[in-house]
Image (tube, rainbow, N blue to C red; front, side, top):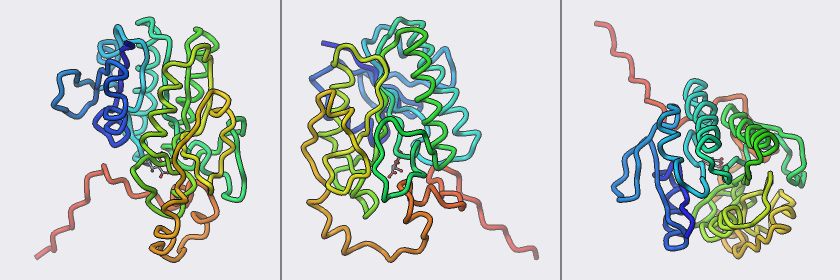
Length: 271
Ligand code: 15L
């Protein structure tokens, strides 16, 4: 049985994967945040020593660790740029060949919704977060060409048991389809560097996912099952830029609120 490291294991996607892949692989879980599990190692990937410790002796790495939304530059820099470099470089030094990197729809979020894009389009990030995902794609390409590592880049839409809104009807990724794509990324022989889209078989998709299909991906779910209900609950359009582009509110000039950021305290009134 292959030993697979999941970084960022306490996040939503990490939890779905831990559940879906249990029994199929020997999982090693890691995160900066604590988790009560025997196979868990606490680590801060912005530190090379930690990255080296967690990547030792595994067959593949699913590198989810880092910011998963837009955030302040300093946070993105530490977690998604330095952290990503440390994990890829630690893998190389430890002789781990295969890395699965969940890049994001936000790496190409400035494409318009009336365009269908495939894995060969030029990048169009919509945020600092999107740029950090492009960095991961570029680093993966470098490590594949230069060091012969095997890189599986999944531009993930939105993972969850159900789509959340109209935009997510196009990019929804069910947990079981996620598990299928990830298993291909771990087990398919001969991967050098591949970009695929991490979405289900959504009727409203904006992606031509033929590269994933070529590698054997056969998604089971379609967000259309939820469409009527989601569209009925959808709020009226307020931001035409967001509505026009695939990345939604990540594309507006306003900063996307960052749920992880500390809330500013209201100023006390001077007496
Ligand atoms: C992402 O890349 C994020 O990780 C996730 O939190 C969602 O924001 C998702 O994209 C999305 O576009 O809905």
